[in-house]
Amino acid sequence: MTTPWPQNYDPLGNPLLSTAVAAIPVAVLLGAIAVLHIRIHIAAFIGLVSALVIAIGVNKMPVDLAAATTAYGAAFGIFPIGWIILNVLFLYQLTVDRGLFEVLRASLARVAPDARVQLILIAFAFGAFLEGMAGFGTPVAITAAILIQLGFKPLHASGLSLIANTAPVAFGSLGIPITTLEQVTGIDAHLISAMVGRQLPFFSLLIPFWIVWAFAGWKAVVGVWPVALVAASAFAIPQYAVSNFHGPWLVDLVAGATSIIATVLFLRIWKPREIMRMNAGVAEYSSAEAYSQNSSQTGALTKGKIFQAWMPWIILTLFILCWGLPQTKLFLDNLAAPKFEVPHLHGLVQRMPPVAPANTPPEAAVFKFGFLSATGTGIFLAALLAGSLMGCQPVQLFKTYLQTLWRVRHSLLTIAAMLALGNVTKFSGGDATLGLALAQTGSFYPFFGTLLGWLGVALTGSDTASNVLFGSLQKITSQQLGISPVLMCAANSSGGVMGKMVDAQSIVVASTATNWYGHEGEILRYVFWHSLTLAILMGVLVYLQAYIAPFTQMVAG
Image (cartoon, rainbow, N blue to C red; front, side, top):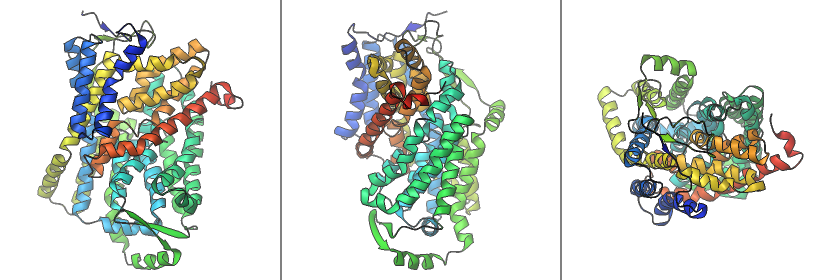
């Protein structure tokens, strides 16, 4: 049996220099996108090449391992992530071709005529509900596409969907990030869930106000603060209750559904004094009288037309919900879910202390082709059913699918390159080098350990992957410093959600869903400071929970 290759977290014999070199791929990628304005699929390739050069030339990773790592990451980028995006946009394009958007817009004008309220209801509440069923960019793709339909500019539809997607991520996909932390650290998922549930609700109360402020300023917030408060409270309270008294599995589904219902019911008894509407991407205010007149005009819509406009999205939600159930996944995986041990990689990379315990087994590299149970497959079947019910013939469906595939070709290549880059950084030990630098912060570790979670998601595009990457490090470091490991493992996930809006994978999903591919640098610049500011605020909260009463009483376990 071949001896696993041991990772070296200080390959240059100087921690500061090793850390600086480990950061080069990230700096190259972000600089190419945001500063040099290089098209993102080319920037992703440049970043991947720089990561390979450092992995092989500096970290001394064997060439065959580096090549296998690249292929493994690229394959995961195409399936399941690219498969999800392709099919979401297939459904979106079908609804465009059938001319249902004006009806959808008019029906939303009845319930939520104000653009700020639409933002809260769709990007925050509905997006959180979708996150509970399926992650990997699904909520961002769907909510950004809907916001575009409602007249939002591509930058706002993309950026605000990304910002709104922070609060639910730690409990996404039926709690997978939390249950993964349990597997990595051995800490009970109920304890981690409870701790995350004592961190994120503070930000769940903030996010609806935050996205309205980011969109249109403080005056806009003042005009809709009652509905923002209702939506935020109806999400944050169930988020705390379910995470603390049940577990991580149903948090987003319950909290998201509660927020949607509470917001819609509240809008029956309350309306803003001035209505903000989007006109060619520009926000315009009108009086309540104008709203009443508009309501009478939209009253001509029949229930049948409204149902037809919403039918594709209802079908999509039902399919995603069904495909997200563990029972469904188990049944479909039993039918067909071949697994492949990646040659020249599986069991051939050894994580080393202090990133992982001394007895940690070598890194697994198994590609699971669970085609039937994949969320993207559920979306594809939902699109076929919705298209058929909309009157599309098989030839039309096939033609639209090919058009969609051509439209997202660069996005799929970009995501493949991004995931390959992340895999090379992970398997070569480069991201652990960056993590260890943050771990050397002594009494300030609760703050910087939270930023470690943010860094992990920014690098990998996944809160789950960040927890796999840094979960053991968080546990080991916190125990050495006398800090609660439950607190810091939870902080890794809670801090990680703030990095979701700046990871390149999510930005590509948003740009593709809004037909704004090629403008990823603008999206990144739009969301970056929101992401960093929220991560810093989360770090401050975790620091208070580690040291300062009465916040210390919040620590679970």
